[in-house]
Amino acid sequence: MRTETSLEQDMMAKIAAGEPLEHPSEMTEEYKENLIHLMLMQADSELSGGYGYVPWIMKAPSVEEKLIVSNIVKDEIRHAKAMYSLLSDLSFDVQSHIDAQQLDFRLDADSSDIGTERVKSDKRVNIFYYPIETWTDFVMFNFCMDRGAGHQLEDALTCSYAPWRRVMEGIFKEEIVHIGHGELWVRRLAEDPATRQDCQDTLNKWYLRTMQIFGRPGSSRNALYRKLGLKRRDNDEVRQAFHKEVEEFCDKVGLTLPEWQAA
Image 1 (spheres, one colour):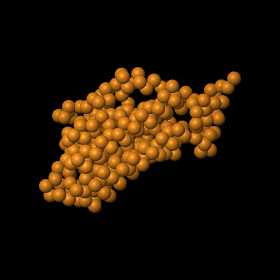
Image 2 (spheres, rainbow, N blue to C red):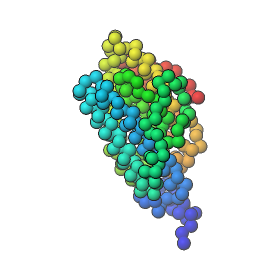
Image 3 (tube, one colour):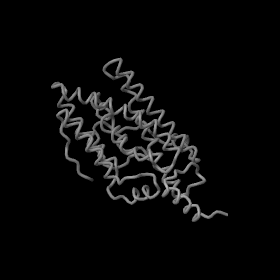
Image 4 (cartoon, rainbow, N blue to C red):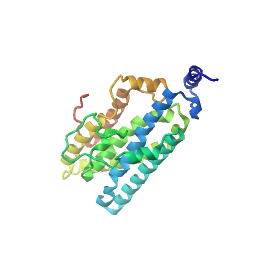
């Protein structure tokens, strides 16, 4: 009978050789638990993000933008479905999980920033608790959070679980399109004197919130993810890659990033 020790040795040998795992039978319970945790964070964030965008189909400033927002919502819900399907393959009870959550929940508009705190039992990245109140909020969420999520999820493109890799190829391409939409509108708003200050103020808010999503530098949990081949980089490496990209774009359109300090 195969022992957990021999299973772990075989699994780690494959990971070290760059051979991704294809089936749950190849993984230890520790690997499976951490894989589920990461994929559930993504799945809940995708679904919650789609819910948060729905009102902006009606509120978008033109018919063209209503269609664009509709397509973004469709993308996010499809991403969630793909991730929940992967979780089902690992014998995770997806429907019970969704039924027990409030993935449409948002904080009140006048709530203070919650830093890295969680306010519900779902696994979404906590930036999805904040409401999107204006079109500039919607734009800046595209620009900051979709970009931040892209940097976070980039490691999944080369992770040690092959089914997640394959799903991420399509998701990643669509997230790049969402970021492009945010960039287009940030440039428009920043270059128009009538909307420039609102653009700067809204950037200040969402940039700082996005900087909180990456986790603590030197986290022991992140170190375990890297050992298991589920991530490649430390949390702060990902954060700094995001910061550099945003800063370069903002310099081009005359916006200034606020100073961020770790909580």
